[in-house]
Length: 407
Ligand SMILES: [Zn+2]
Image (cartoon, rainbow, N blue to C red):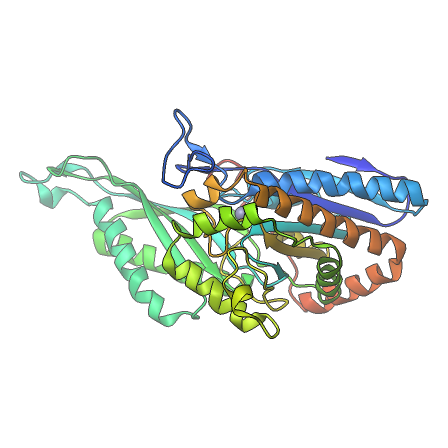
């Protein structure tokens, strides 16, 4: 954490900086090509995310100092967003709570402001059975692997009876071994469970726990449930969304050079056709009186409607339930690029990625400066925050003994 300023509004900027495993990829390569002896890759652009935050803080400090405007700017280094949701633990320890306003962004292939992200929990389901020879004494065995399989089947039936935006996905993290002639006494499956709001997500989590109990009953095994990370949904803030959108209109530099456009065009040839098609459809839908050239631009020129919900999750959502939070995206990759893909990693050091990073820094800095110069906006943002929360109070649903890194 780093801070500048003595008094005035306290503005925090979040800077994620983590990577994804199994996404090693050579920069600027047009094919899937891992770097030697490297397992990780910046598939979600967090190297731009954290860096832009530093740039924004320095710009705000310089401006406040030169202009003599009151304000305190604070940078948070926030590690391990992917999988661990480290901000949940930082909040549990009291981080962020004294901020007046928090500002963050995320790299993407199009512009957006605000928008609900999905609430999510990650939990491990550990089944304990009885080991036995699978041919000579199967009647003595109680298979933990059977329980995992039955739980997965049960959950796949559950999908029909949940809200359409609900997502859950699993990985079998322990199949009980590699020997089919042994009844597996231990097996484990990890679930990510998501829903639009925290309460809906907890409801689905409870139902999935019941399915696990049912699978344990059917197989004569026992199940332990171990939740390890929690992402709250993003709470939109009407005033901050408007202010951020204005800052984007004012300061975003979209004078893309021919070489940036050419680079993006090249990457579009190795992206999924579906992704590129969707980007063009969005451009036609969201741009005002678009030309063919604008719709076909290899770098997206459109902005999603303010507050359009997203089907991803972020632990910045947890912060948004505690402090009024501004959140936006701007283009760092060719139109149609999916996050968490090798194509996103490959484009991570290109001119377009750098431009996106500088653009984001400028938007964050301008938003922060506007808030310091007009503190009445902060009062309004706090009122909007209270209205958006309604009766729901944020709580960390993880047991106290769960530590970051347990995931
Ligand atoms: Zn991300």
